[in-house]
Every structure is written in C-alpha cells, then in structure tokens.
Amino acid sequence: MNLSRKPHALDAAIEQSDHAVIITTADLDPPGPTIVHVNAAMLSMTGYTHEELLGATPRILQGPDTERAVLDRLVANLRANDSFEGCTWNYQKDGTPYLVELSITRMHVKDVDYFLSVQRSVTERHPRQEQIHRQIRQLNALLNSAASNHDPSTGALNHRGLLLRLQRLIDVATPTDSLTGLVTLQFKRLDRVDQAFGFEAVNKLMADIVENLENGLEAGESLARTHEHTLSIIIPVDADVADDPDLHMMTRAQTFAAAVRDEDFDIDGNAVRVEVSAGISRAPTNSNYAHELVTLSDEAAQRAPKEDAFPIRWADHSIKDAKRLEIQFEGELDRALTDRSLVLFYQPILDLSCDEVLGAEALLRWPQPDGHDPVEPDQFIPVAEELGVMDRLGMQVFEDACQQLKRWQDLAGNAAFWVSVNVAPVQLRDRGLAARFLAITQAAGVTPACVKLEITESALEQDVDTTILILNKLTAAGFPLALDDFGTGYSSMGRMIDIPFNIIKVDRTFVWQTPNRRGAGVVASLSHLSRYLEVHALGEGVETVAQETCLRDCQYRYAQGFYYAKPMAAVDFAVWMGWPAE
Image (cartoon, rainbow, N blue to C red):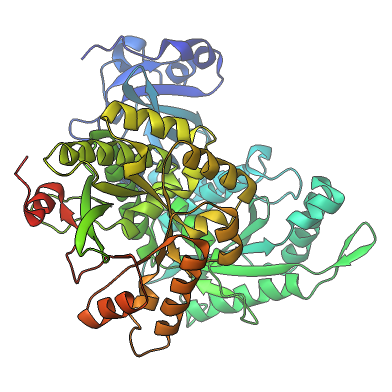
C-alpha cells in the first residue's frame, strides 16, 4: 500500500492543530486500518516517532485497559458510515496509560476513503487499574465544565456533550443492575415565535424552559439542548432504586412535559404556552450506542400522538432496521436508474367503437433478480420523488416508450398505433418540457400525435398557472393530453374547462362499481360530461364483461383493464397482438 497517499489539502490545518490528529486507511476487515499520517501533537501525546507510527495499525496505541466495548462500538459506527465519538484508555510508547477523548469521521479524497481521528488526552497519567472509575468520574466533571460541550444560549449540554455523557453512562450500565433512559422533548410551533419576535426570543424561551426543568432534575439526571427546538434529559436508573424502570421513565417524561405545558412563558410581555411531545428510549433495551439512542428518542417524540393529554411515545428499535432497508432501497433504485434497468410494460387500450387495440399505456416496472416479482411503481415512485430523481426517471420512460413505439409502427399496418406515457408532477414545473419531449420524438422518428401524455389530476393542484402554461406548450407541440384518475382529485370541472385535454380516464374505483352500484351513476355522468366537452372517455380497470357492457352503453370510446390483458413486457405484448417478434 502506498502510504504517501494522504490528503495533502489538509496538511496545514492538521499540523497547526493543538489536537492530536491521526489519518488511517478505511480498512475495517483484518488486519484493519493502516496509519498514513500523524501530526506533531499526536507524536507529543504518544511518544512515538513518525517512522514508528506510519504503516502501523491503531492497535499500537491499545493496551490491557482499552475497553473492548468502546472498540466494538467504534467499528460498528464506522461500518454503518456513521461518525464515532468516545473515550477510552490508550498507551504511550513507554507503556504509560492515558485517557483519550476521540472522534472519528470518514472522508473521501480523490476517490479514496480515509478515517480522520481527532484526539486529546483528558486525564493525568493513569497509575493503577483500580482508579479507572474515579478517573472517568473526573473526566465527566471536566467535560461538564467545558464550553465546547454546552449550548451558549441555555447553558445546557449541547448535542456533542449529550452524546459524550450518554455514551459513558451506557458503557457502565449493565442489563441486570441499571439502565440509561433518554427523554426527548420536542416543542411545537416555535417557528411562529421566531417569525414574530426573532431567533433571540426563541433562545430566551428555550433558556427559560431549561431553567424551569433544571429545578426539577433528580440526582444523576442531565439536560441537553440537542436541536433548536428540542431538549433531551438523560435519566440513569438503578434497579435497586426503581422497581419498575420503565414506569419510572414514563413518570419522569410526564413530569417534564407537564412542567413545560402548564407554564406561562413570557415573550416580550406576552404569555405563551408551549406545546410539547416526548419520546423515550432506553439502553441497553433499545441500543448500546448514544447516537442511535438519541435518534430513536427524537423519532419517538416526532410520532407521539397529538391527541393524547400527554403526547409521549416509546422508541421503536425496529425503526433502525427499517431505515437501513430504506437506505439500501434508495441505493438500489439509484443504481437501477444509472444502469437503466427499469423497464416498461404495456397494457392494451381497446377502442370500443371498432373493438380493436389501437394503443397501449406504458407502465414502469422494476425487474428483480432470481425470479422475484418486479417492484411496483407505488413502492419506488415515492422514493424517487423523495430522492429528487423523478425528472430523470420520467425522461428515461418517455425516451424508451418513443423508441419502442417506433419499432412497432415500422411493422406493416401499424403506422397509427400510439402509446400513452405518464408525466410526473415535477416535470410539469419545467417550462422547457415541450421542447425536450419534442426533441426525443424527433430523434426516435415518431410524431407527437402518437404519444399521448397522461396527467394525474393531483398534479394540477399546485402552481396551476405554470402547469397550464406548460400543458398549452405541449398541446401546441402536437401532444394529445389525457387526464388520468379523473374524478378523484380536486376541482375537476374547472380544470377541464381551462386545460385542452383530449381524453378523460375515469378512475377504476368508479368502473368497479358498475353496473349495479352507485359508481355506475358517476360513470354515466362523466360520459355525458365528456361528450359536452368534446373529449373522449376511457374507462380504467375493466375486469368483467358486465363492466365493459356498461361502458359501451354509456358510449365510452376506450376501455382498459385486466379483462383484456395485464401489463406485459414489450416482447410479450407483441406476441399478444400477433405481431412478428422483434
């Protein structure tokens, strides 16, 4: 390994730092990371030379009193791409132990990952093993008085100080004799205070709340301001003090919440009541790591039921696994987009006036390996929207559909065949969408008239003026418009008058209720509306002959649904249509 590949851009800052800095490779599997750089402060703290540390592993600094639990947590955090903060015993070259406070983060430089660790010795030389617990208590006192671990506005611990103190309590807690609880209080609607009086008023309000809560803290409890509108209280619980630790923590959470909720706080002469919700997590039940415990407590407070007199919720440890699955799913979706491994299926659309299939709707699917069922759009589309990749995905769908349409239209007698493509709501914010779509159709060799654009009614509910402008541009470019899921959105009639749609697709929830349920009246009424507006009506979700008959009786032009065929891959669709194989 080339140990000279350290991130040179950090050299000046590292060498001038009073803190010891060590940079290693990001290898976590045996034999582990390798030291590639240390600064002068690191050499001074450990007594080693550059030559002795470079190329070695951090184990060179460990010894008999280095806590295994802390090292396990360190590795677990780094494997999860999380940072690490903690405290353990290391050893100087001459064998002298020292208590070191360290933080480790991953950094990426020129396509190479490294671990950057900033360290400082926080205790005098350690003479004897039996003094470890006394030294740790001294360290806690030292950290409690350090301004860097406290919120300057309230004097409470800040997020960093909370993590350091919480992890120390977790490390000494045992499953049978004690546990460490964390209550998180989230204060609602404080943005209005900021808007009315400024952020200094928010800080003063938080300081008043902290003072109110500190008056009720019990021995061993610690208060921290972890976010702008959030406080957390550490609650150590000894089994010999509380027979029911969970009941004790719930009681404390209710006490804290009531101390805020029932108080009139003064803001510029105005009496203000503060809404509060609370979340509770506990170690080792929920986690052995401070960062995770804080996250769980925050999420529990966020989800606490507002209708309860005391909106308090226990942490759900399964959230961690769910979040990891979400992150994994997001990564897989991003790779699928990059590899263009999402594919289009096609569902035929029948023209009821001639009983022929004249078009098909392009529907996106995500095939899975090993014969598993494809991932359905209702699973991955919301994720794509959260990731902000819907425009990218929508353009891929449009391009693939146009290219497939061209291949089908080149078959004898298919020149008029058309496809319909769904347009994502975010794409209707792009004033250049018509030009982009037009360029793709020209490159594929198809006419815009054969590519019908399906717009969901919900896409029309925001920034209506911009949306109508873009839809008018699409119409001017020659693209027919279909209003999808018609009847399920808001202010449908007004939109139908303002926007030049060619087709209304009546939602399947109404078609399924034909011919003898109340939905039949809706289906009939929308048929009359379509004729009045001089647009075609398409019934979605047809599954029975009775439903098709109802659409015919109501003079619907088009029908679509499982009664005719399920969505199929392009090759299967061609076979179903009786076309030559591509």
